[in-house]
Image 1 (cartoon, helix red, strand yellow):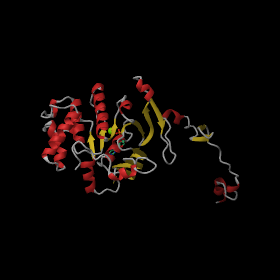
Image 2 (image 1 turned 180 degrees about the vertical axis):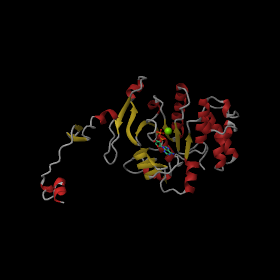
Image 3 (image 1 turned 45 degrees about the vertical axis):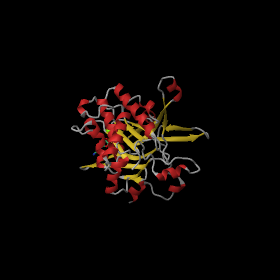
Image 4 (image 1 turned 120 degrees about the vertical axis):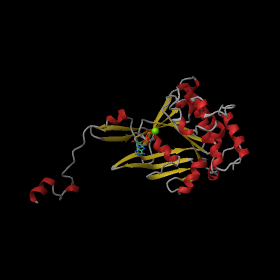
Length: 334
Ligand code: ADP
Ligand code: MG
């Protein structure tokens, strides 16, 4: 068991990796060519199609994307609540594709905390705030004294001092979500996942919850992955990852120059995956629809893409084809 107030931060294997000469930190989350296919009766839904995502230890990222783009699917896979169909997904030292059912239970209990959108889903309605926070610790076998100490520290960090004896319904929506974050942090997991945690809150309360995530991320070096629709989220996170049709299409970062002047301006970058695949923004991809082909060129520094309006006609008398009967000839001679 870790000391009170101290998270296991990153597994030991990663500390070793940190001492490597190239000083690149081993990612805490690594998804490679990840697929999730749901089978519903006769129908197959491809929710994730070759998704690549790498998250560093201690990073705080937000995932945004249209409804149905695969955000919850990704989070459920990372939470060990569902299993991927193909590809690779590693969290810390766990390979979540090959993991046994028994290890998956341990992973869910100790290595990941989850916050849902619906406050009612996060808390047990008949338990006090403090008992809610202590419940995961009790299930993990933490001693009563240790539970009490850590829940007190957490409630203070969450700005809920003096509210430990209340029942969830005696709190505001924002306060309930803060308790939910406390529950997620109870067993000091190195990773917190939150699926639209502010979806039911007003803008101002939502901002406070995001503020809290950044503080906890700083305080405990916990890695955080949030799914959100909150427009101003970029200013609270290290990176915003955009998901489209089950793949990561682009990433954006809050521009530090503008942020210092109080404005939020985001710089957005297209993601080029390891296989060289990109997803053009909708408006640009329409330019290529006529022929469905592009000419790609480079002047050494920049890469340009030019739409080919019409498909070129195949050259039927090429030497490679010589001696091969044309389809119409085949029909007449056959
Ligand atoms: P998001 O969270 O971005 O709105 P989801 O990950 O929930 O998207 O869903 C991605 C796609 O997978 C959608 O087309 C959705 O209908 C489908 N899907 C999600 N969960 C299931 C399920 N349990 N069974 C069948 N299809 C599902
Ligand atoms: Mg969702």
